Length: 428
Ligand code: SF4
Image (cartoon, rainbow, N blue to C red; front, top):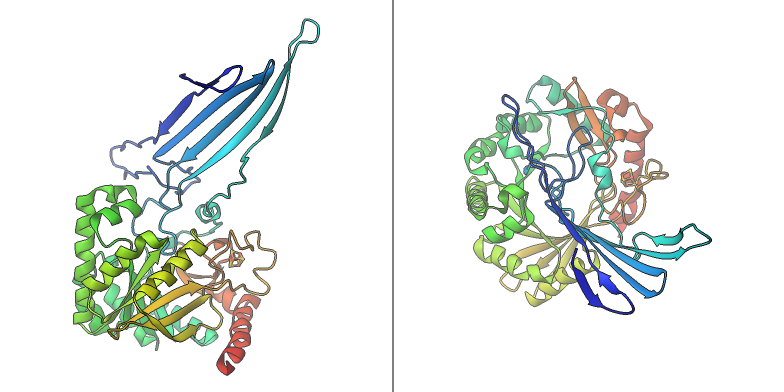
């Protein structure tokens, strides 16, 4: 304990405690999972920030009366221990601090001692960053790797027929690490769908020739940094190592080149939390050919600051908007801008769409906990067998086995929402 500066009758005393994370040592024969700086893991393992500190200050303005202020802070967190799993719009759960206030009055009636106190936790009403529900999102199944077999083709085809789908979008984990990605693409094409994927570019250079041959239409690259230092800042703790980050960036560049070389369309999704990220956007455009379609995404965690930063960057680039694209029945919305040199840049945002019946009564149905809204239908392979259909990444408890989903009101609700939106949009 170190005494602090005197403010009144009694000095402020400021004990500070800090904690770093526990490291799980490997047990021979078992896989080590490093949970340092990770928010969520299986079996309800709790968040373990890399740094956490608590500081208290006590002030006694008059005899027997004390004012105690406590500040609690933790560092930012990765969502999961697997760097392949990324939440594109919010790469990390931001750091956060809370202030608590306790007012205490000591009394000595007779021979006894009595203390009356009044405590306010989170005095400044700091809103915690969204994230809590995703880690314990109620999934009733364990997902397994999709295999390019008849069962997959049949699942995709049935979903296509029920919902009138045109596109199959492969996400992860990291799809480029799938050992049979080209066959999965092929199966999707066989089901009559346009096949795209979202990738961090980890292994794209090696698999792109075969994927292109199988009919892959487009790759959306998630760009978390354009220099190793930037990438190290936002990535999982293991990429805080700049050399690893450099290797990862090299792989991303090679993947983008390979994608364009084999005639597959490529786009880069880059989240812009604030204007400080303007150099990152410019570097991205300087570094890659105009064939790489750049999409600026606002950060949901940073709200208006992020939107204003993108608008400023676009204005400084002399970008002129020329088209709006709104997807009926999903929260996607993007505006195309043309730069003076002819290059097209997109501003991609989320509109807070809700499923009219399913989202009503959802405990997360508010502007803070559910910023992404209803984004579309997701198909998962269940490790216990069969496929599951989900409608919300935060509410995995809403997933249903494919047969049940196809016969459900939820399926009809999705179709009705899309139809209801499509009419007015088509007229507009
Ligand atoms: S999309 Fe709907 S179900 Fe999902 S979290 Fe938001 S309100 Fe809840």
